[in-house]
Structures are given as C-alpha cells and as structure tokens.
View 1 (spheres, rainbow, N blue to C red):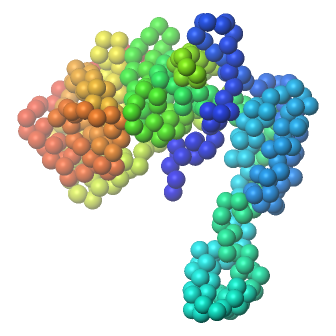
View 2: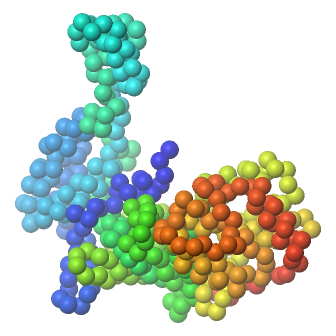
View 3: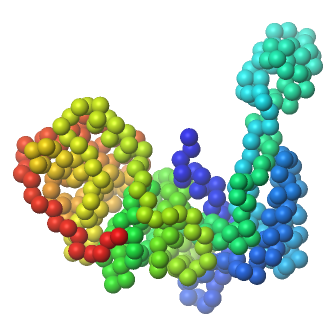
Length: 416
C-alpha cells in the first residue's frame, strides 16, 4: 500500500508548472496565480476532453491531449503552463484499470518460459503454447502481456466527475502544495480545531513548534528546503498536511519559498479559493501508533495506552504529547513520537517537552527520518519505523520506580 504522502505527491504541481505574480517588484513577495470563476468556461471544455478518453489507454491520452488542452486554453488567453497544470490535476482524477482478465505478470512468466524452452520457437508459437497453458486465446495472451504497464492501462470514469468549479479549486490547492514543496519555512495561524490541525502535523511527522498568539495558535513548520535529507519525502508530507489547514475557518499562512535566485514570501489565507478536501476534526492513528497499541496488548502488560487529552504550556509555547501510558497504580507517563528531525530540532524539542511536562516523559524517535547529521541527545528511545513495545515498557517501569505521579497542568488556551 502506498502512503498518503505519495498520493499527495502525484497531485501537487511540479516546479515547472508553478505560476506566481509579483505585485510589487522588489518587495520580495509573490502571489499565487489562482484560477477563478472566469476560467471555469475553458476548464469545462477541458473536462469534456478528458471524458472523451474514457475507455482508451493512458498512452493514447498522453500523446494527444496536452496539445488539445493548450489549444483550448490559448483561445481564452490562458498560458500553456496553466493549461498543463489543469491537465496534471485532472489526469489524477480519472482512475485507470488493467484491461484484461488475465494477470499480466503471470502471463509474462509463462510466455518467457515457453520461449526459453526452444531457441528456434518463433513468437507466434510461443504465444500459442502459453495460451494453451493459461486457457486463453493467443490474442488475449498477447494483449495481456504488458497490459499492466502505465501507458497501456485503460482510463475509467470517476465515480463523481469533478465540476469546472471544483477543478478550479483543486488546481489552486495543487498550486499552493507545489509552492510549499519549494519552501524553507512556513508559519500557520489557526483559530479553531487546533488540536485536529496539530494532530495532522504530527501524523505527517513535520518539524514543527507551537505557540499561542493574539489570533490563535501559531505553528512554525520547517520547509523541505531547510533540511539536508528526505527533502522530497518531507515535501510530500508537508503537502499532505496543508488540506487540514484549509479546512479550518480563518486560517492564515505565510511561506518563505525559493522560486528563483532569491527567497520570496507567499501568503495564503481562508479567503483564497482553494478546495476543501478534508473534514475536521479527524481522529486518526498513525501506523506506528496502531502497531504499538497492538504490541502492548499482546505483551499482556498492566500498562494501557491512550490518546493524550491535554496540551502543555511553557510560557507562550504549547506542547501536544501524542499519547500516554497509564499504570493501574495511578502512574502516568507522557509519550511523544518524533517524525522527521535534525539534531538541533530534537534538542530544542526535548528541552521544551521536559520544561512543560509535569509528568515523566518518554520521547521516541525514528532514526530512519534523520534529516541531517549530528550528535543526538541521549535520553530518547530510538526505533526504526516501529517502536519496540518491550523497550518502551522497560523504560516506563524504570521511570515509575524513580518518580512519583504529579498532576498534569491543563493548557490555558482555547483548543477545539
């Protein structure tokens, strides 16, 4: 199964298709060139073009459609880059399927085996022998041989074809996500559903800090261009997080992006016409948490795992532990799982967590997601893609013996 960030990576616009405007030369600020209501006319024509390729192969569509889309856009005074961007978004909205009842990989194995039996065997004879073995005609075998290749897949109609208005909003969403993939630093202000937005940031594993401001909670997120490793993977993770922000009323976001030789500021807010593809709040566990909960159950330990219901405050800064371990004797330990990290980020996060936490704390880091070299702080539980439940319980028992339980201080801010 492919991860969500991989799917987001297919939908966001690549760098070559990003369109921005400079309202004030020399200001260091750029504005995304969104599509609007007037673009729905030509986008509707493009939708009809895409629908006309239902039942045909991806190879046919890719060979013919780009030029036709550009021609339609050109008639309306729209640039080729915007036309290609809309085509990029729509291509991911039309599902595909393998156009054969046979299994192509199995068919190839049989055909190649028959061809290898006799060097003098011609192609038609090899197909005929393979057809007899798989109970199909030679023409079916020939068609199935490479039917699973991307260009040979057959296009099908989406369950709910997007409207022209929805396509415009999806394009605008993909444009912003593409810009975020070129960012160094992103600041997000959210007023409502704070916990749900923070939850999405944690599930994406982002390098992120949280603080209280006059307009709500501010999230400071490192961009993919600020790290040394995993830039593509991290960029897709950031793109997958953005729709959660869009779903909150009154959000504001500012990103420092590298689009040319110099950094440029991009501002996005709730007034922009961007597709709302997420519903908040959403209570979803990560694969790591699901595996940990299952492993703890199988250990038959006295400790139980729960989603932490509190936020912790350290001055204006906020900390949101992932979950907690509870012992029947009344002892609770907070657990924080760190995704992408640099040694500097991890050191700062540990200092904040230890200063804010009024209960013992265990921090788990995935060593496969290191974004830079450097010495790591020692007091962490390291793992590789999966937390060792036995080691976690051993550390919890050690802390229980060394500490006494103390009450947790609720977060003073308004969280929804």
